[in-house]
Each structure stands twice: as C-alpha cells, then as structure tokens.
Image (cartoon, rainbow, N blue to C red; front, side, top):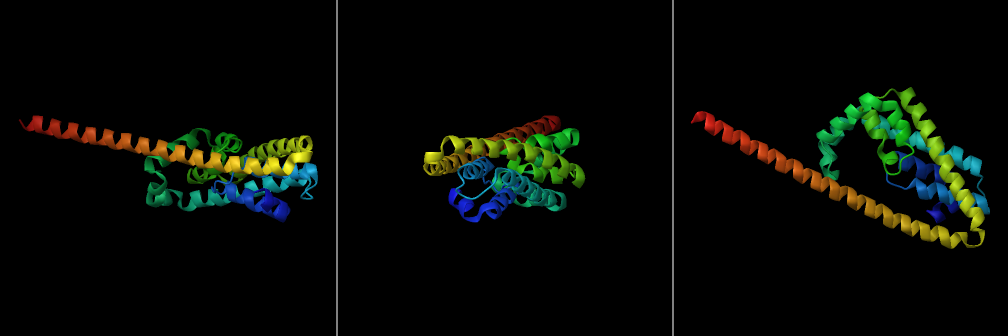
Length: 217
C-alpha cells in the first residue's frame, strides 16, 4: 500500500478508493492514513487537500459502480452466486426491507462505518434508491470519512516524521492480518447461521410430517 501510493500518487489513491467502494475489500483506513502521512512528510509530493478531494471522488465513483450492479442485477447475482460467500435471498430481503425504512440515512452512515462502508452500495442499488439521493448521501458520508482519516494520517506523519517509513510498513502488515481475521470471522458467522437455518427447516419439515400422519390416523 505504502509503495503503491508513493509510486503512483493521486492516480494510485483514486484507483484504490474506487476499488474499495466497489466492494473490493481494500481498507481505506490504511489507504487514507498512509496518503495523509506521505503528505505530511513530503515523501510522495502529495497535498492533504487534494488527497481528500481525490479520495472522495474515488469513493463516489466506486459507490456508483456497486450501486449500478445492485440496481441492474443484484438480486439475480445474489440468487445465483451468493452461496459462494454464504449470502442468500433471505439476506437480500432483509437488506431491502432495511433500506425501505431508512435508505438514505443508511447510505450516509454506512459510508463512515468500517467494513460496512465497503459493501453498502450494492444493497442500496438493489433497494433501488434513486441515483441523485444515493450520490448525495454517498458524497457526504465519503467526505466525512476521507477528511477524518486523511487528517489523522497527516497528524501522525508530522509526529512520526523520523520513523514514518517503518511505521507505515508495519501498519500495512497489521492491516493485512486484520483483514484476514475479519473475513474469517465473517465466513464463520455465516456458516453457523446457515447451519442453524438448515436445522430449523429440518425440524419444521419433521413437524409437518408428524402432523400429517396424526391427521390420517
């Protein structure tokens, strides 16, 4: 992450934020803090204001990409491929009902919540939130997030000017480890949930059979 941003500057930052906002789990917590720190030390010839603008733009573009996928084929995709990440129609229906009640606010809040922010645009599109509404709340939430993390990185860069390279590299390794842990927990949770649903369904079927036999008698 550090080397990529240091080498490609604003273009690298734009690509990373687009990818993260389009449901590819690249932690913006690292992307933005690293960029802010580089701006503080002058290592990557970056400006903190431009970083915030570019990152917010990337988040908006990536968000619309995921929103478009959800809007045009999210339901079909989840029905067909969701089993590979332990998602099913039940999950989709829960998301749609959730967005029917609090859609716009959910988009804005979701953009400033770790992990959730990466995937919030897909169900927003599936729930058919209007483009202008989605864009407005995505922009506001992304601007808050990018400003906060960029400034945190900038402040850290100032404080750690003499050791910034080593610190950022170590943070990158820690972030990668944390991402693996989060993904593992997600799949473990989904597996347990699926198993409980299957068990409940089997119990219901057995109850129906028993009731049918008792009726015949």
